Length: 244
Ligand code: NI
Image (cartoon, rainbow, N blue to C red; front, side):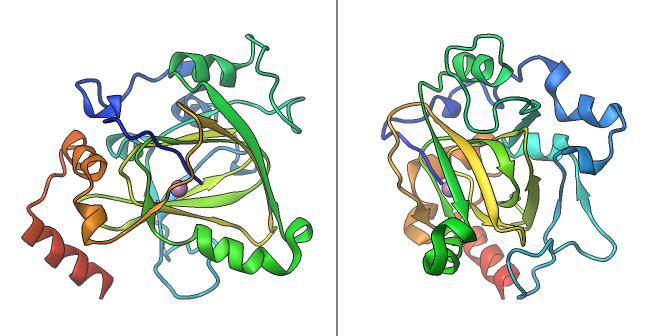
């Protein structure tokens, strides 16, 4: 899961949150169309924090949905682009395909496809998905387009430090900003294939949450960009209370 360059991210400049592409592909539009969830509308909600299998939905009772607008305030962007015919991969030269248009517009020059499944990985699968689930951040955007299968990205809301669970299924294109704490898990179907897009060459560096990572320039810049700057003292107490 991952991305990064060492130079300060352009996200930390004046254009935050970044401009969304054509609203015709936005989640809002998708929802207005009143399509059922089974048709892959990405949805998000607050995680229940119960210590059960990470692959379960972890929806609170009652559920506490999170709107695309709330996600956008955290810098988390999403689109839905039907996968139709691109299940095994996306032809980069297909200028008509919306994912390629977004990639070009946002400067994602590199890409690869990752395939994770219990069937394909065997004994190391459990260990692998536990690794994905370690809270971390990156120094660049993390961009995923889901080709098949499904899973959950959890992202930290600030300043509440609450986990927001984002459901991803085929056709979902998700951008997590540099500096956001997050984690990923497959669901109980145990299979996902995703296109990973990168601004520069892939550097697979997850920075685990820690005092040092809290002081990382990309983390600090992220908090500034979303208007959630907190003093180190307040931040430490807040994190301690909510994790305890
Ligand atoms: Ni990641």
